[in-house]
Structure formats: C-alpha cells, structure tokens
Image 1 (cartoon, rainbow, N blue to C red):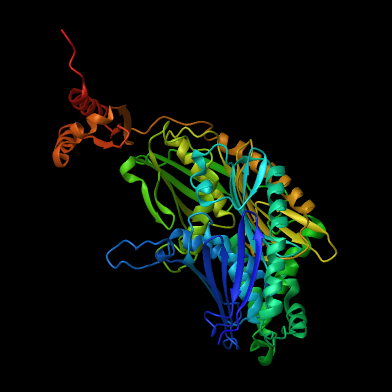
Image 2 (spheres, one colour):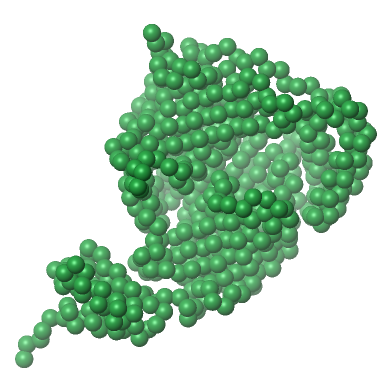
Length: 625
C-alpha cells in the first residue's frame, strides 16, 4: 500500500532521518525529517497554472509547533493552537528566505510549504529540522526548484565552533558568558544563501569562520536529500522560463533614457514620481499585445535594475550621488519626549526612527509559553512600520511578519550589551516607531534603541550601531559593495546584509544572497567595509550621547533586599494578606521570589523606604537585652 523511501545518516551527535511515501501522499511533496527525537513534517503543494495576469511569485511558508509534540496541552480558553507565535513567524521567514531565490526565474505559480512539528525531544531545535524537511519536500515534488538546500545552527564556545548546540545551550545567551554565538546558515552545495545570528561582540573573522564551518557541515545533509530524490522524486513539472527578450528590448528602446534621468534624481519622493512617469511613458509607446503580456512587469524591473546596477559598478556612484562606502548624513537627538523614561530620534538620510524606552518591574516581564517550557523575558523590542513612513495610505493592523522579523533583528543586536538582571533588575521595553523609511529602518531601530536606552539610564556595556549593506555582482565577476543602502538598492541588488555591533565586535548579522558566485573573499571585503560604516555611525551617535544618562523622575526605582527563605511565608501572609497590606500602605510594588529576593519598586523613594521598613519589621530578629 505504501511506497516508503527512508534515508539515514549520522549528523554531529544525532541521527538524521528523511522519510517519504507513507504520509500526506496527495501533496506534491511530503517528507518527515527526524533529528534525534525531534520530527517535522513538510508538505509542498503548487498550482499547475499561474493566475492570469499575475506578475509575482506567490510563495507561502507556514511553520507550526503542535503542543502535543512535547506532550503539552495549549493554554487559553479554547485549549488549541491559535495565531502563530513569534517563534513560528520567525522560523517561517527563516525557511522562506533561502528557498525563494532558488525557484526558476519566471515561475509564478502559487506554492505552499507547510511545516508541522510532530515531536520535540527538548534537545534539538525543530527550526533547522523544518528547513531540511522543506528543502527535501520541494526537491522531490517536481516543482522547478534549483535546490536542495540545508541549514544548521552553530555555537561558539572557548574558540571552538559547535554544530547544532541543543535548545538549552542556546536559550538566554545573555546569562551564558561562555556561549557567544547563535548562528543559523542555509545554503546549497555551492553557495551560502542565508545567515541569521545573535553574537556577543565577535570579530569579522570569527563570524566568517562560523559561516564557512556551517557551510561545510550541511554538505552531507544536501547529499542525503539528493539520495532521497534519486529514489522518490516525481517527474519534473513541465515549465519553460518565459522568453521576454523582445518585450525587454521594446521596453528598453521606449524609455531607457527617461528611466536613467529619473534614477539620477537624489530625492526619494521626486525620484519615485519620475520613475512612475517613466513607466507610464514606456507603456504609451508599447502595442496592445505588449501591454497585455504577463511579463511586462519583469521587463520593466530588468530595465530599472540594469540602469541602477550598471552605474554602480562602472562609475562607482549611486543613484543619490554617494560613493559606494559613504553613509548618509546622520542626526541623533535624545530626551525629546518629556514624560517617557528614555527617547531618541535617529535620522539617517531619508530613514528615521523615533525610539522610546520604558522601564518596568518584574511584573512587566513577558511570559513565553514555548514547546521546551515556560520562561520569562525582561527585554522586549517592538518595531512598527506605519504606511505614512513611505508616503502611502496602506493597511493599519497588527504587526506583520516583516515587522516581527525586523524587531527581532534589532532585539538580537542590542541584547548583547544589556546589563545582567542582577545588576539592573528592570524590565526594558523598547519601541521603534519608523517615521520615515528609505532603506535600513531595522538598523535605524538599533541605533535609536541604543541611544534611547542610554537616555533612560540603562547602563549598556557599549553603544551599538547597525548598517545595511548591499552588493552588485556582474556576470564578468566585477562587483560593488554598497554601504547604507537605499530601498531601491535593496530591491535590485544581489546580496543584502545587515551588520550591527559595538566598537569591539559584531552583535548581530543577517545576510540574504540572491545569486551564486558570492565568494568568501567578497564576504570578507563586505564585512570589512561594514565595520568602517558601523564605526562611523557610532562616532556620529556619540555626539548626542556617549554614556548612560540620569534616571527619569518618571521611571520606577527598584530596591532589592534579601530575607531568609523561612521568612517568606510571614511576609506574604495568609492568602497574601500581609503583602497586600504592604503594597496598599506604602504605594510601592513588591515582588518576592522563592530564593527570598524581594524587589520593591516605585517612582517615589519614600514609598520604597516605607515598604522596606514594613518588611524589615516583619523579618527582623529580636535582639537580646
């Protein structure tokens, strides 16, 4: 009844197994990948015809962690999985980013990739297992996918790179000084496609070494997927990439000169208007048949990319007139909002972020219910990207995948420099409101977040800055590395990567590569140029604020006291009666844990002292005499 195919290999300290042919047989491709006792099922389906007139590639990736995988029942009233968690959203993006560029250009049929966590051993993180399963399912599905890819996680401890460290090792790196890296790499047999990392001031050489190590470690996994495909792959889908050479030549002849003039305008809004006018002028010169061609958008984009890219490599100049390694003008301001605990306005060219820091108590910590357990986080960073930031009237609603992803990138960048919770017992919430955007808004959030926290009096270990980089690689191997890219340069380049860090090293690196041919040498040069940009930005930021400022009078003060554990019951009282009375009489917040550590919080110093005295009178030992 079943035509099962199963492939197994030893990968690091665990056994990796890929299985197909037994479950979800009506999907175009279905693979269950198992590492240790963590299993993820990936199912791929794709439409056999594109929707008429559709001029983009509709790829959707879903990743869902089922609570039953870890023997748990979901919380909440309905007791079932609901909207995606932050982890699920980030993992879906992690899978989407390396596979999207590997579909044959011109393929515009709808594709759905669904990854479901079926079993979790609380040791092996299911995100990398899901990426491998998705790649294998795509490879055997017959879809025009130029894979396979594989991915792995890399840690860094005592100068040694570690393959796929377990979940516990990677949880809350801030409190594990020996473990300095959480890096994810995805790639094909020949090239790295995607990098995502949280680091603790690693050098460019250490980061590049980790990427190289990861690419070596995924090679046997790619071979295993190829073995599976040799025995289980379906017939390739009959798809011929559209040939729109004649259409492109017509578009080019109709408006290359006008498009070149439009891209020469340095102001974003004026340039966007001129580019739109150039597009309309081109359409007016085309025939009815050419206007109805589904590849018209692709031909237009090819013309725009050619204009933008050609000038970069040939002349070393960019559309806004900057040199390749030049950062846009920077203005940093702090303390601009009177009632907030900390605030900063960071402006870099036409990208601007208003970033606000709020300090809270232990009651304000975020409680995260994950497959591997419940835990609390005392550092939150939320990124908001309203439509007005790009001059549009668009949808306003809950944060989308992009906002969650950008917020997490900024969170990773700043996490490394936070003080230890024992030294600074506050919950820190940073909110980045992007008020203008023309590229690199996530890195503006990093810079503004660093300034905002220092303005709030948070004793950061060092200031953090971030810069978005781009790369244009021509067919003859010539290339140009761009510092502080614009939105247009982001869309039309071959690699974009974001690097954040301090003067001493990198705290976050995100890299997306869209073409083959990016060598380690190019990556090395790009990281070196990014370091120059980062140090320049740090210098500009220091003009506004170079160290932590004074505490806001509106922020809560927190005093910590320790009591014997056998006195905890007396402080709490029957049914919490005593501690409630302390809170009501003093006006301060009181938090007590099982170790006898009491945190007393209030913006009012007198309230803290009142609560302290009341608790002390309860726990004080009577003196003889």
